[in-house]
Length: 314
Image (cartoon, rainbow, N blue to C red; front, side, top):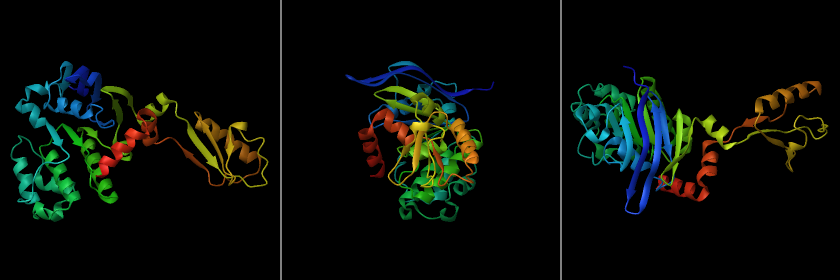
């Protein structure tokens, strides 16, 4: 039977004394997708992920992960999920090859350990001991240990913390290759660019509630966030007839910028106007939709985002 949802959560609650960590969360993640769960520290995302992994029990609601109750912690459940924590513990005394082969032996249908080392970019360092690994290399090893069991569902907790820009993008390609094989990935990250680049669906949790979710385009539409169109006209150009009229704002440098919720139509009108005006091009034209970071700031506020970002760097 084809399963359409890898994770299904209905009305999940969790309290710690008087503190409400989760307040009636509903969540459904289709199989074969990447879902980025975002939120400031203390929002409830760690509690929710630990419930999905089977490490914590919900106080109320229903939870199904790969069609099973994660609280049962059955062998079938454990063999079908992979978990990449922020730290997997000490690996200093072993080589990467030894660790990945040992992890693989614990699963009924593992991936080829050497292929996994190649996948995460450690093939050339497979016989080096963990004590000689950089922070980024240890994080790659964490990822290798998480995927070698050949999981249907992979939990990634801040997967590229400590990576430089090049290593981060290489890790993104690793994640993409895994989803191309049909795996489902639930990731938490403070790098909003990472969530925007990798995820099919994004959910933002705050104060124990899932306050918004969807694709990046869904979020833009739900928040009513406008697209910006900007270009630099010649100083002697007559601007009165430009489509958009008084909505254009001109900076001191002469650049024109407009915010619109119909960028395609506006650009079509602008191009027709430019052609009629005898313009071969619209100098320095750019069209920019709001980034995930800007949408996130709008949802949770700058202070919480700055705190989350600073902790991700530490």
